[in-house]
Length: 387
Image (cartoon, rainbow, N blue to C red; front, side, top):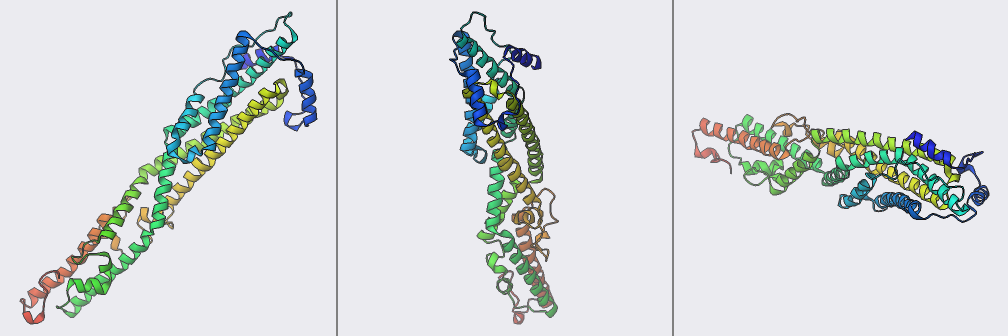
């Protein structure tokens, strides 16, 4: 590729820039363009067809990049087709490796300038082909392959819903009510009290707020626990590790693409005056489109993903507390079913069921003990089972 660039560049008239293109004044640029391109520029036949094709290639890629940023594709899984169109465009070469067109001595000046235009544009596209397009293709392919748009959207939605539900507040209240119920049963045992029903204990301890009369989860509590379990499954440890790995890869590839773009832009600054002004603008539009796209990759894919992952690991956040089963159960009610799990999926529906079963079991043990002690003496008003 390098030899090809040198071969084509050798065909073009030499231009030595005293300073980079972006530091030149408008007047200086106009003077240079007038000197080089002041006459008519013509192409015909195969050379004209090639020029049209090269312009279309660059313009299409620029438009695909712009479509992704303008439509916020990286934030919307429903618009992934637009990103896939960009991927398909990036899979196609901008330009071939062939050398440029050699003008003949008897060619009219306008055709000589036409060949110069085509050759210069071809060199510029070959530079972009060698670096920017290749790096962008790798990046976009992995954004799609790793399902980064869908992952970010799903994790963002799940975490927002968990934050809005404020389930740890409910669980903290449940933990307190569970402790109060167990404490009251202990008082009954110590004082040999026989005439208190389970329903009365639910009311006094306020555990009844979360249960039916039979000490089973109320529909609202059971439903909330199941919803939390379903949301936490999205962020299980395996999914979190994969998301972290993919995000790190995309971050590296985005940086590589930005570095390639910077190198191509530096080449452009030294080469820009060899391009016809209209062609120069096409290249500038491409640079702007890539820059905007990479900026959205960094902000929407990398940074937001990093924040979502960080939030899932934060023991002080709503999501983190639920994933690690911490910060809302000082009385250990939620550990009746066992210690916190390592996979981030705590099975709260089961934990709630077990803690309520323990409450009922503890009360029934007391009633059975009283019945055995007093031989079912009716004067003691011992409840006949859970009432």
